[in-house]
Image (tube, rainbow, N blue to C red; front, side, top):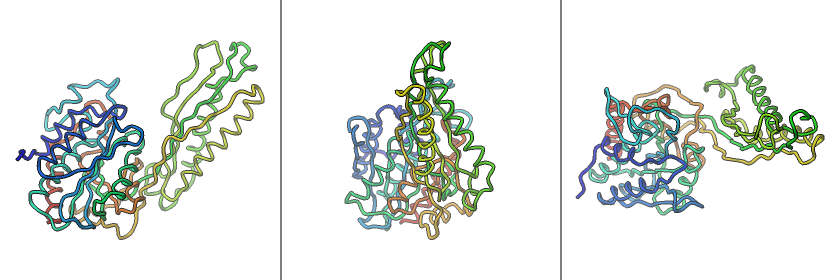
Amino acid sequence: MTARLSPREILEKLVGFPTVSRDTNLPLIAWVAAYLSSHGIDSHQHPKPGEPDTKAALFAHVGPRQAGGVVLSGHTDVVPVDGQTWSSDPFTLTERDGRLYGRGSTDMKGFDALAIWAMVEAHHRGLSTPLQLALSYDEELGCMGGKDLAEAMVASDMPRARSVIVGEPTMLKAVTGHKGGVNLWVHVHGVEVHSSILHTGVSAVMWGAKLIEWCNRVNARNAAQMPGPVAKLFEPPYTNVHVGQISGGTAHNITARDCAFGVGFRVVPGEDADAWAQMFRDEAARLTLEMQAVCPEAWVEITPMFELPPLMPVQHNAAEALVRQLTGDNGALQVSYGTEASHFQAAGYDAVVCGPSDIAIAHKPDEYIEIAQIDAGQRFMERLLAHLA
């Protein structure tokens, strides 16, 4: 029988796989499947549609073959380390001053390690209520893999669980709501002329800037409004829109033929994400008419990237009640970032977000998790196993 690894030992294995979202996660998934199998736990792999040779999700079941169990959900991908200065190899777990450094240690391989540990312990100890594991791909690209995973689990012959604990870093506090999101990719098609006669062409960069300024105006208008009762739960207490990347142009003295950028709305629960996206499309259509009055071949192309539903605070949430029982946390906590919990909620599960460490540590150079948080997470899992026994 294979030895039972500690959460820290499992975390060391997971961090060692450089599962940046643009790259494969299959070696990590294969290791998890093999480790679970070595302890007599069968798992199911769900290849990513369109990329079956690059990425896969994994889910597994321990305990009686009955509905009503608990899912421990995490993602396997991490953000890049490009351009970041690290004090040690980001893909080698390194201990310094009570911390374990490595890309993904907080977001969110620390929870993944605890969940895998709990599955093996549950199998050997025995349960009266099932425990399941769900590991996804492409969370860092907009939670896209979580929807695939939730749908695959529902369609499988695995007994349907009731509660999902998504282990994003919350310092082991219960998060019961978060904003939704809709992201668009914008390509402004301009017309090149010499910049001395720019009035005869269309600068994609300059017209793209008008769309970005529309985003600034929307943020200012939303910030100035009195927030409603749901919006008050969030920081900031309104739907906001962000442009984080932009590229375009070929030379200083040529009107830009192309300008491309991403636009992302973080939408307060209860508001219509599609309506916000349509407002942006309407503004792009209005500007397109103005551009085409100069050069008919100019236009704005908009491509959907992803949409994430909000996580709605609801009454009688079994997952929330369970986490509060296990942690003693009775606070009201909602966040403005998105998680895969909303995809599970949309698929009919009760969902809550609760995991070790702090989201403020995620994505930074020298990302780390406190050893104390790993220990606290293990105690959380011990209480969960006792509850399910």
